[in-house]
Length: 457
Image 1: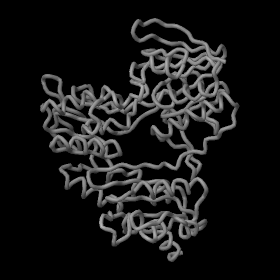
Image 2 (image 1 turned 30 degrees about the vertical axis):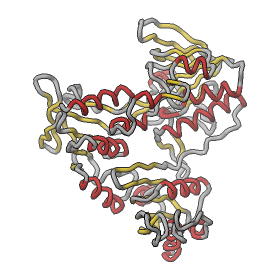
Image 3 (image 1 turned 180 degrees about the vertical axis):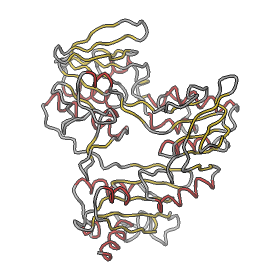
């Protein structure tokens, strides 16, 4: 059997490596349109801040860089074709048409099974002067290198970030390490509007503002301005001009699927490929995973777009299992678990916030709890603020939001697992969670929140 994999960042390389572990004889061809592969894009903000000092660390293993030679020699992938773009799929003949981006040559590659792991592109809105110099996205290693070079050069004095999501906040923290004032522009009323209800963003806003970042919320970018040298010089928002000499766009991603759409594979409205529980597309010989596909939300069963590296790696392993062993490994979906930090505050959410739960038709009951991550008398305890959202009728927990200086991921991961199994308030109220004063209060914040919801019920 010959398997061709298009895309070699997270899902594609994981698929290739797992297939080889399962089968010594399968022919594997790994294709990518760039020459830097298998990199950790989520680490780019920490490269900007110098917490990661060299960009090569984002695509290195203990045996050296994860490049063409690494996958061919160490992972025993038959062929790795870089700087090669997939143009079209002939599903009847099972032929992929490819373009060598260095020579311009067009050639074909046959397959028995095809895996599409083409990922996503950062969104660049079609605004006036979007082509001005020093307007960046942060998606690939070269983006990080270019942004960091400008920050270290001292030539930028007025950086602006457009987008108050996870990446926007992480980039703002990185730029503050250069002692530069930063502005974040977002159309929403709060930062992280898809994750947090308004009342849960108060502490986040305070920490951001107290650390030299100006929030320009409820602000729509109308166009960019540029100077005589073609450099960005300003942004028109709400009919006012904001001066800037550097812009970082952090307004989301869009799946790279045009060549797959042309082949007639089913997609959602945003272009994301739709796959079944085995990560098979509408063609039984074509699988897809990573940032180019839609995922099923475990609560509502709706299709959602969740471009994250951990999900892409899970997809790759499942795809490999199903191609080699037959469709036996199911992918259950996502709880939409997300976490980040800014200076002294950590923040995360999983499942539905109250606003989303109401929009989905649930009869919502909720509470907000303030506690600590350790016993109240323990010397280095850290504060936590948690909001729990549940459905009054079924008494199922729908999600939580957590902020604070303490460990927020523990609560997020606990509820994430619970969402997959329909955890109810009473289950959480009686949960046997790890306890020692150095690790948790006698009643974990999740148990306290569940008890309050029980009282309300």
